[in-house]
Length: 390
Image (cartoon, rainbow, N blue to C red; front, top):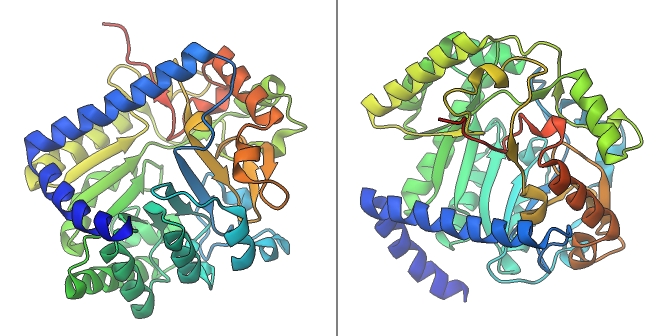
């Protein structure tokens, strides 16, 4: 199967590169996701398919930076716990054999994990496809860049998303360390050079976040992309919850305490809706003018920006992420979702299939269907926010 995929993938990429084919592919994906969503909603019992459509594996919760707005910041570098990262032999046993299963890796900073390349090779050997890796780019060596390019050549690795918050001075301030931008830029260049040398079909984009430290420089991300030779920018709206939303979610889910909620908790996001509208609009316009691809998560539709950036406001929508994607922590614990880290399984003692439809998982999914969104879900990159009426 893998050699056939190596032949088919380049053809599919060329077809999707044309504007018409790209639109048709996007419509097909939307139709497929909606068909799956209708099936889930019609069933209504909280059960999912036998295995998830994808797995997000938090390969480590160690990180070499300290970013104020990081939604998992409180989980990073917890003394002693990082030593519980699953070793390769346990990873081999814990993850199922399933050709074509999508896996994506995040953290923490994944390249702080010393055996990350062996981990990726293990998943490739299982026939998986790696949808994306997220990284701050500071630890990408020549050796790692070459290995990643090779993984892309085999058809395993599709996309690397590198986090950048603005021009050098803005990025360094947001990341809490001088010289971070330069280290990230060097890592990006190593990736690009390795991909060019090997002809690897590796997509590299930069990812940025709406935040008080970088909001006024948001449109300058286009200049940053140009300087770095990048043609795609992904924007994350600030993911945050108020203390009251956290408490209400704890109550609705029956969680033991607030520690299970892993998001940026603040009574004030530090930016105003007017700022966001102006700066995101300027970024979009500049991307169009320069031919830079642009995407944003979550989709904060015109008309709901005020509610999104006004603490305490409600937002309508839905989230089916826990029906589609398994969230596996570095130690093999399976969590309900990235924000609500209620343990619903453990790959140290269960198969993924057993954990995926465990009693606790199913009960929480059923409760999510009842409420459509828990309060801390309103400002998550996985949420599907409803378009405003009219």
